[in-house]
Image (cartoon, rainbow, N blue to C red):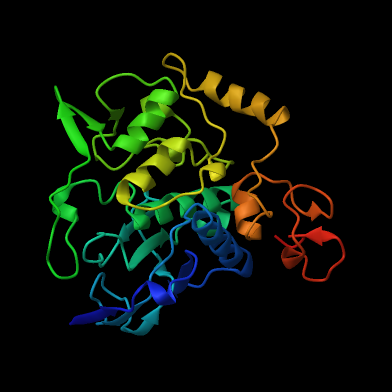
Length: 314
């Protein structure tokens, strides 16, 4: 049984993600990586999380999840470490959706315990960011069948279109970003699962269907995925978009080479007026940490020991 009540915008604060770990224990370093991923994804969202009072029964969304009672002031994400199929790193999905906005109140990520101890930090971070975006609804709330609120209502909205046997994403913000990147066609090409950008079309992007093929790195959250978040109803930090270009031709090699050369000649991050709101926002914008006093983006509020170095501990 589930009951919940919206508490209103008066208690809303900035967007945040709270992760709760279940299943096989993670090492301290792995736990820190999970928190880092949550901070990075939180920094992409500028719209507030409106608090909600919930009473969610155990096993309501997935078997093994505990009962949840009280007020949620952040998006709650259960991270369950357990045995999955050999070819699956992780899965992520939203659970209950709000009435009206159809945005999630909580969600769940399953991490494959097999091989997790051998997974480099960059690959775990990339995986967690990818799955957290699925929890937010990117790739999981694109079709009307999945857009059902806690009250059983649906808006009937579909952001996926089939043209001649191929699937395309047609949300206006992401589609505009795709056009800006030079993409052509009736929409953004999708993988057959209708929940990821086509790997052939985007190659190494965080929500690419082939993202798992590009290891040893954190794939960029591009303007394409930020546009998809906007299409769902989130306000986003556009300055948080990673450097990204569409592949030219049928090879991903040139795209990766271009990103590498671009990193060497990196343009300064866009700093909001007054400096970065948080260290997570500074990291998401691509700022080099720590930020020294006098450099763009420095704020005394981010320099806890007042030694002139902001965000020195990440």
